[in-house]
Amino acid sequence: MFEGLFQPMHLLVIFGIALFVFGPKKLPELGKGIGDGIRGFKTAMKGSEAASADGVKTNAKEPPAELL
Image (cartoon, rainbow, N blue to C red; front, side):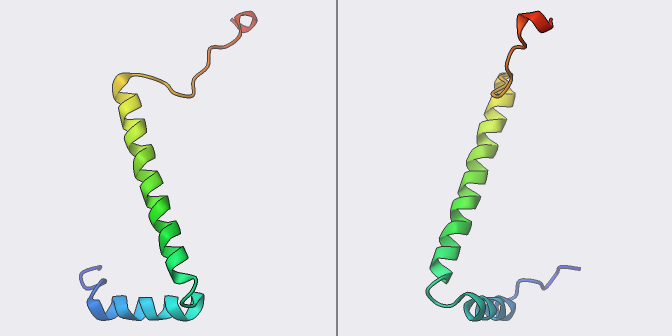
């Protein structure tokens, strides 16, 4: 189904459409934002893997004594 999806001509067409929609001044900002988002996602995934491997719950709080 997805064998020939990302051929060079397809990528050029997608880039051309993005250039037309966002303009040449906004395209680098858009790329930087996407890159920062991917980098943040990878960092969060590594942090959650390390926390689960250590058996540490990062956001867990003890309930108040009167609720026990």
